[in-house]
Length: 255
Image 1 (cartoon, rainbow, N blue to C red):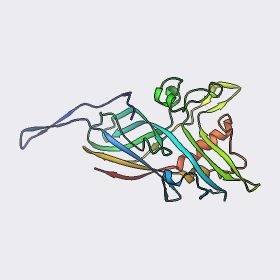
Image 2 (image 1 turned 90 degrees about the horizontal axis):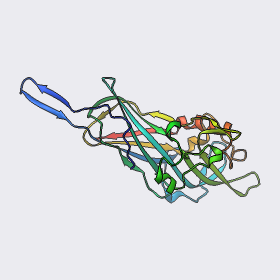
Image 3 (image 1 turned 60 degrees about the vertical axis):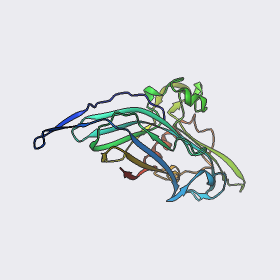
Image 4 (image 1 turned 90 degrees about the vertical axis):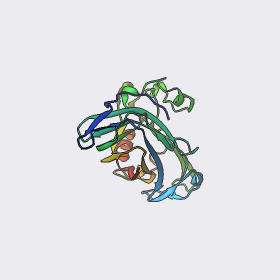
């Protein structure tokens, strides 16, 4: 887990018990986010990679060869209205079974929160070249002609094309860039609201990515039309952003 605290709007709270005349001090705690993956409700692990065993909404048979993505900016809204924003980020790499679970920076007070959110990708202001050395090492960079910064997701595989042969696809999500004007980019990262949560001393939040949703909602994906060279396609990046809205779901919260 990589940690940078952007803002911590929290302090130890002292609650006085009138009956016992004792102070109860609530110290900030960390929470753990766990990520798992499925295809239309069936669990996926990297043991499933390299097999033509998945069928997308367009009835195309495909395999998964690589799947990794960045999540960042965990945010919690307390019932009092105060917001805690943690500038943590994490590379979830199902390919190598790394980063599947990460613990946030300490700085969250136990209590009732009306909302917990996280960002898929990196917001535009943070998505700059050289900002994340570990992502450089992981070759997660976006080339300068396509705006620089970092990928949000690299999802690669093969599919059976109209000629009935295997062909590659590279479903790579970045900011929507017009290659003729890389300074005019649309931030296609997005936040996911997981709803209300009670934060205790050892809170685990499990989140699931339904990989099939990248191909179907609201845009039914035809891999024969959109398979490779998608990073520089401004309109296609906007379609990916739209399909991402239904990809993640809250599975469970345990204490």
